[in-house]
Image (cartoon, rainbow, N blue to C red; front, side):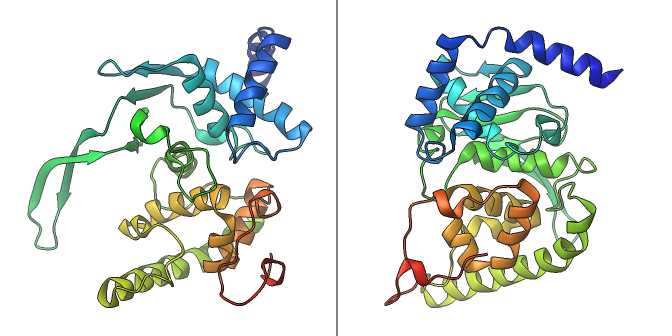
Length: 278
């Protein structure tokens, strides 16, 4: 019964996706480098998913954020990319995106190693609540969409993928059964290796061996979000750093961004065509 109702609602939503709307959304795909190389069938699916995402969620500007219709379309399209061959249901049941004009302050509470509780605030550009909305800052959204390893929308929606498996962000999304044991074996080792690389880079001030955003060392949830972000926006870096994780994410998402990404060489003195692929 629920599936019938869901299909009925989707059919009603898609009635508004007329040729003019299609052209408008396709133009936004052309404007975002990580989306432009998609095939025609992939673009059509992306528009359908993005349209449903936009009409399923409330996009709420906060503090007079100058949110435009094009901004909302861009957010929805980038949110749809990770689930292009999955479904929007993989994001769980959140209902709202709060869009801030700049960085925002978020309350923080933690207990240190001595058992002392601390409370404060932290300035953030994005956040995904375990039970609640996704928060995004427009100042950082402007930099999302390129092949540079950074994408605020994909990073925060990766947290929702993670949270949808049990309600906690811990780096373990709801994988198909065949991928669960390989992920449990590979992911913690990759996280530990990333932390070692970053610690060594901080000690020596040599960062040439750190391929992913060091922010992923915060915890396994952030490492997962950074890996998903890199998978879709700098797949060569992720594949170079952690080829096994790249292969697992490729199987999970049913996508291979490597062929559609601009080719660059992570190693000196060899050709991009010589780089091992998964």
